[in-house]
Image 1: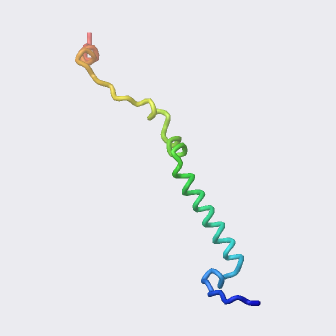
Image 2: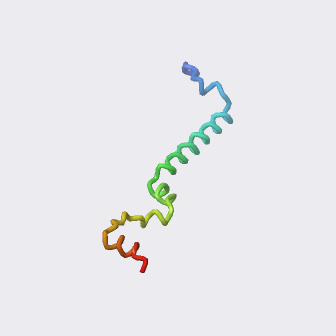
Length: 69
């Protein structure tokens, strides 16, 4: 007994094409999710940037730095 099923555009292509497109979609989804992980993005910063703190220059520091005696 054959069922009447509407033909979908995906059923008109070969199985090989469906497999390749499914694999590409899986690879794209995996790549996007991997790039959005916070641990991946935070490791791309340089180690020297992690310890950067703003230093406040005081008048005493300036007077010692500019004292040429």
